[in-house]
Image: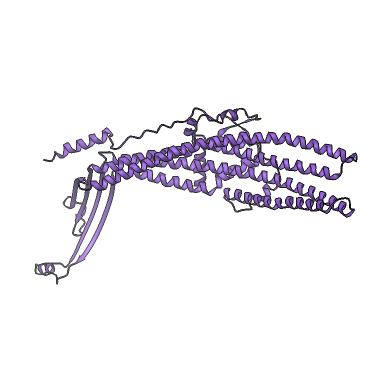
Length: 493
C-alpha cells in the first residue's frame, strides 16, 4: 500500500535535510615520511650572503633581468594559458554540479494550425458531421518546474567530486606556473654559463694559436721537432672545435627562453647578448619538513584533490542502487480557438507529478560502475603516494646537487688560485730568461681549463638551487593563492 503523498513528501524532505549521502566519506591519507630531509644539514651549513624568500625566490639571485624575465614568463607563457583555460572548464563543471541540486524551470508557448484531410477514416466521419470545419487552430502557454530530490546524496557526491576536481585544476595551474618560473630561471642560468664558457674557450683558442705560432717558428729555425708543431696544431683544433658546440648550445638555450616567454625565437637575443656573471645561488630559508612540503607543493595538492574527487565518485556510483525521486509541476493555459480566451479560467490547466525511477533489474551494471569507481580511487591513491615520494626524491637530489656543486666550486677556486700563481711564476721566469714562452702559454691553458670547469660548476650550483626552490614548492603563497590569482587575471586579459 502506497503512503499518503503528504507523508511521503515529509519523509523525502527529512532525508534531504539530514544530509546523509551514500558512499565513503573522504579522509586524507596518512603518508609516512622522515621528520627532516637527509640533505638538510648540508643546506644549513652553506656559507651564503643572503637568504631567499621562498615565495619569490628568483628575486634573491639579485639579477634584475632574471626577475623581469620570470615575470614576463608568468604573464605570457602559453602552457600557463592552457592550464588557466582548464581551470575555467572545471569552474563551469562545478557550477553545473551545483545547479543539479536546484529546481529547474522552463516556459513554453506554442501555436498550431492544422488542415484535416477528408479522405482518411477520421476525416470522412468528421466531414459527415454538420458544421465540420477542416481548419483547426490551437494555442498553448505553460510554465513548468522540476526537481530531483537528492534523498541518498548522489547529486551531493557529484557536487563534492566537481568541487575537488576544480581545486585540483587550480593547484595544477599553480604547479604549471611554478614550473615555468623555474624553467625560465634555469634556462637563463644556462645562458649565462654558456656565455662564460664561450669566452673562456675563445681565450683558450687564442692561447693555442700563440703557442702554435711559436712552435712553428722554432721548427723553421730547427730548434724544435715537427712533432711538437703537430701536437700544437692538434691542441688548437680541439680548442676551436669546442666553440661551435658551445655556441649551438647557447642558441638553443636562447630560443628555448623565448618560447617560455611566449614570443618567437630571437626576440630577446640582443637583450641577452651582453655577458654577465652566472648568478650566485642564495640561501634557502625556511625549507620546512617533508610534511610541510606536502602541504605546500601545488602538484601534491592537485594529486590529493584528484584522490578526493575519485572518492566522491564512488558515492555517485553507489547512489544508483537507490530510487530517484522527483517533483514536477506545470501551470498553463490552452485553447483550440484564437478568440482571446487563452488565459481565462476555462482555458487554464495544471499538473503535479511525484516521480520515481529505480534501476531494479540493472544491478549488474551498477556493480560494474561501483567497481570501476573504486578502481579509479585506488589508482588516484597510488598516484598520490608516488607523487609524494618523488617530491621527496626531488628535494633530496636537489639538496645533494647544490651542496656538492658548491663544494666543487670551492675546490676549483683553490685550484684556480694555485694555477694563477703558477702562471705568474712562469711569466716572471720567462721575463728573466729562465723558461720559454711555451711554458707561459701552457700555464695559461691549464688556468683556462680550470676556469671552464669552474664556470660549469657555478652554473650547475645555481641550477641546483633553482631545482631546490621548485622541489620545495616555492614561488607562491599557499595561504592567499597569490600566484594563481595573478595567473587568472593574466588569462582574462
